[in-house]
Figure 1 (cartoon, one colour):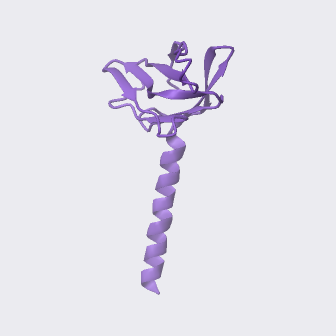
Figure 2 (figure 1 turned 90 degrees about the vertical axis):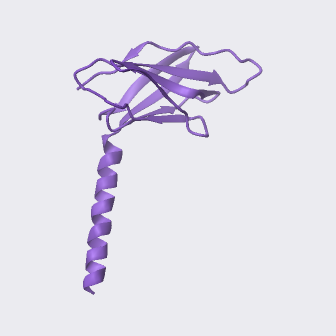
Length: 127
């Protein structure tokens, strides 16, 4: 009986930690309209905890290195998920007092067209 109590308590604590970590990630939605890429931040968080970019426009996918984040330490490339519809990335050495920019790299799904989509110049807001 006591063993079950401790196991349940540990399980509840682990779930709480995982939920807190997931909610701390910054969430972005990436869309394409008329050949123009837009990125909207849909949740607040810190890139130290990670960022997730999700593509919401059909007909496009992230390039293999779907997001490039540039900051004081240089540029960090972030790989797309195997489905190529999202990118997760955690910035190593993130400093909220510094400015970071990111570039979103997209491709058309129809590879016979093989035209790269122009990437927006986006700055991360440190709040």
